[in-house]
Length: 588
Image (cartoon, rainbow, N blue to C red; front, top):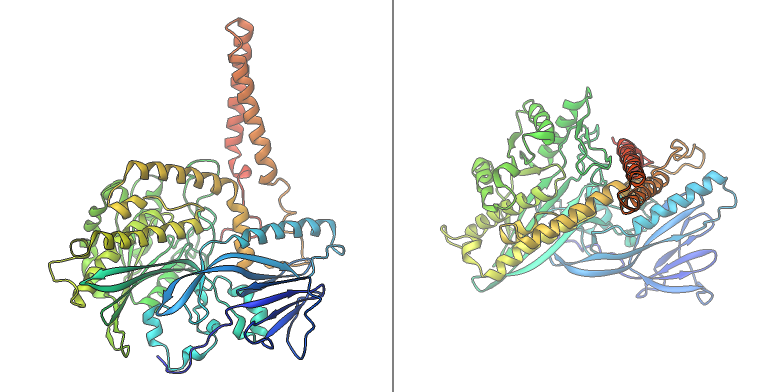
């Protein structure tokens, strides 16, 4: 890597709010900064003396994440609090704790009645965006590139602005950075990565070692669990995440990469009040091309690819499993391995994953890992391929599997570094607390990326943490499963709209028709009505059953029970209309 200076961002700004502008200034260098006119959202550099005494508010912010234009004007997203959570290759990494949109104008007087309603909904989406979990960044280095890619970059690349160093696939706010980029405000452009960043200290041979786990969520098909399944026509898979496990030990630095992503076919699983809605493969003439595009991209980026499919071979999942297997037969350059996780491992046998490892061991060892010396950065070995894992959600079964493969790779790395003998492994060599740290990193990472996709922590966390399922873990998984059901059915439509808005999948257009006029009956209206009818029916039924056993009471009870059952059937048959649905973009 180059020896030029590292580009650093301005790490803190003082924000002065005026009636006509927002002024952002560096506290270290008062003449360094910019202002945004609230009348039109335009950016301007600070020039000359600025009278700051008349500001209505003055407070610190920790970065400008971008801008977005809605019907009434421009909104500016700022980071209002953050927390340093560790270092990446020696550079501090922070997690966003809170964000806020600043309204530049917000004048709705010139809007039509429909536009006022639309603007109100868009503002609701901005409030959802403000609560986005799992956003990370560094003021001093790019964190979107894995160690091996960084090694291969040309000399001097670290002197470029950090947003130019970044892999756009993993920049969560790339779409809303355009105004800052156009105005050449490189010192203030903060690329955010959504995913997870975990760090721990291990004691190996009395040498303190650092292990880091960083997951980078791709933005190309970003979304929620039920509303972003499969792939789009370009071959971008939903919930696609690159996970890098880094180890720094006794003069060496290693990196092991894995990826996950939804089955790259065209398929859907539309919520309809069922606990497990039916999976449906979408028949399309470009299905084979979608799969080919997806794996061509992986081969170009990561080298030899082994696709590990953890879905069930029977039941509803079996239809998708078979469709995936059939299409993969057309790709001779990618090895496909179907491993029915539930059948082979059950709900508690973590070590049964050795059966999977034995099946892919040759490919796994050939793919290897990246290894270099910390002094001088001398290359020792490269990772020549990647394991791509998936289940249905690419969360729970995938987390367990990836943590197992990461442990196997870590054993190989430690042997290469002479930290353990050929007969030892991390499970037998390290202290119990070190193994617990390793497992906790993977559990916490699984919870964080599950929260971003499904809205709850991951299931099966106990299998990673303890190697088996516990009673407490079963209860915790049950609560998370019920929470997923509620969120997926009654909230994720709005959350998907917020993601589509901030990622640029939908662009607000003041001239075009309202996106909400197409839906006369909205789920937000139907759900309370359906709930009231069911609760009312059950209440009346309960009252009539408790009145006694005379003929009139029995007849009333039968009528109420029948009516309630009919309402339940009606609600269930209209489940798709009652559930929360995204209204800005289609499935593909």
